[in-house]
Image (cartoon, rainbow, N blue to C red; front, side):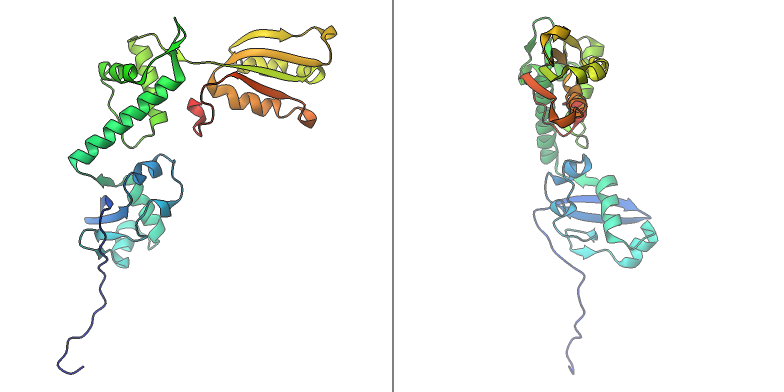
Length: 259
């Protein structure tokens, strides 16, 4: 068009209300725009769908200005033009940009989550009574536990339990589950020793050959051994083996290290 301006395509995409993760590499700044609270879930493996983390599948040099990173910048700094690969590196290694107020709120929530996990999983071994979440929070303050926003509450709960035990702040131990294991006696002969390796305490056991064809054991196990027991019993032919939970403390967590 004579005398008019020539249209140039823009590489600016503006986003609002986002959580920005920033990584500096090769003298350049790279950013990705994420949904709030999703970055930590991605880093700890809670969220596995990257599309649930990103507001837009794009790499920026400046999210607030909508400036998209150029392909040659990716190639120079990351040795690849694969956008997905670069996004994952930025997500895992970058620094999440949050205000002091947001960071304080996140740490408070994480501390509460950690204390809740510890309270659910542990008891005072002298009384067999659980600690309240408020008591665990006070104990965490006493041992000067520092919350890491990039690790899951379950992972940090293990650290808290270990530190409480090492510093002997209060008596604390992992709660145990009471279960009943049943199977044909002929299978018990084959599996009993393996079962005992997983059991903390045998409370009752029917081993008398004259007691019928069914073997039964009531025992205490650490919650983390529950899956190992069920997998072992699932190998009994024709589904004839069963594991019954007599007293339950949360066993449905995905993280088997603190089940």
